[in-house]
Length: 198
Image 1 (spheres, rainbow, N blue to C red):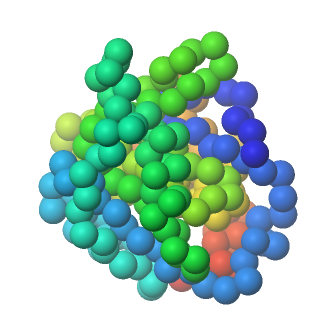
Image 2 (spheres, rainbow, N blue to C red; image 1 turned 120 degrees about the vertical axis):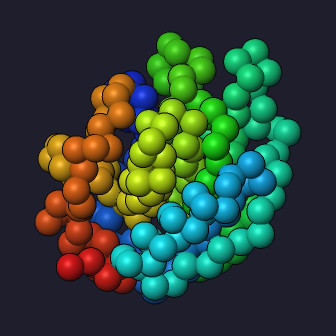
């Protein structure tokens, strides 16, 4: 897997160039893993919106953010460390998305610590989404959009050129207000994986 070359604020996708439709042997269970800083309202909203698209979702008990992911020079959490932590906790046949309000970051090129909204491996078994950099009065909806974007990466979908698609590359900005759903191509990949998308 390798990091896509473009630096952007919204999210990163670690992508393995395989045919996404070949990734699925059976339907998986998505685990929503809140960290203990996440308000219940945020968790419930993301859960209710995801349930409209995917039936097999389980909410896990809140857990503390792991100390191993803390990056003290910038007082934020390393998203790649959080993903590895979540992956180790994810059983076979499951996929985990961690949800937090804390600032998260990763390394991109020459930038050692770049603040982001989400991170996902493409494909992968875990991802992370944060509300820290979202618009104050739109945090719930935008957190859902970051979450569905990162889950899309774990299902093998790279960034999409359509600016209305949940999988668009934000290119250093918060473009979630432009997004209205998955484009036909991205939707097709998810439908093959058992997502109930119309």
